[in-house]
Image 1 (cartoon, protein in one colour):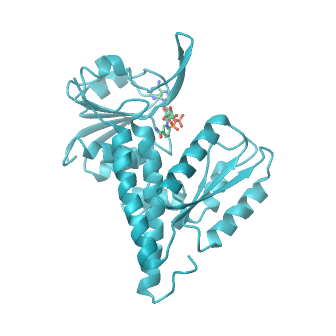
Image 2 (tube, protein in one colour):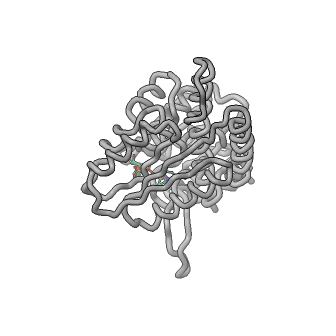
Image 3 (cartoon, helix red, strand yellow):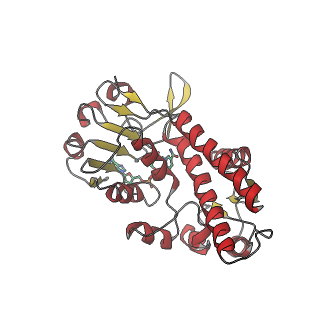
Length: 298
Ligand code: NAD
């Protein structure tokens, strides 16, 4: 039986620590970390994500500011708001909920966000900084996966890790973080030949694909750690359910540790978003203090 990595519990611990630090920042520097979230259109899943992010931000004592635009809003209008938020010293984190309606350019929107406020870690400057081992705002989902791996391993050095999926938001940054932790990393994707065999040799398998139950029990080495990023809506016995990319029922008896879906990586993602927002607020406050500047206007 595998050790179940409980994302609800772990994220609650992270959020508790964030709330404690927010309190200190308020008391000592008069700074309230603020997160601006922009939602375009009425995609039901995006609405739920945005609501959850705002709720958690408020719970840890941050200021959550939501901006909602109609689905047919223009790129110029969106860019204009982002530029205003970039300039606003009281806003620490800016996040544009993806996906955007097809007439809008996600690349342009991401590039418009000031890298220092890019709490999703998607701006090319943060991507480059992560890849070259410099300080960066790191994408939230892979960051959450790394916290979960720390529950299993004191040191990841020398572990062989396979990341299934190569998206910019999960697969690639995940591989970068594992590499930074001195793992031997392989990325497999839709064109890889022999995925099963490659995964079977791994100590750690991270699945970020978007195909329910893709990773089967014969892909997994006994005792390996399996991190399931996938969130897939399926209908079973006429009911809507959320399933991961891993065939949990059959993989769990073989794995050493595994994340469930739901209740695994998902809650860690929001916790890491707030960790990033706190990081921006703390660094800015420290900068102001070092330079003898007041923080009242932050
Ligand atoms: P994506 O569609 O951008 O990328 C999927 C990747 O999987 C691609 O690189 C593709 O090459 C690869 N792939 C597709 N079919 C494959 C196959 N048969 N075998 C191997 N690789 C294959 O998806 P994404 O944005 O990276 O998200 C992946 C999953 O993670 C989705 O289910 C998404 O909902 C979920 N997700 C969860 C969270 C969270 O907080 N838990 C956050 C982001 C994404």
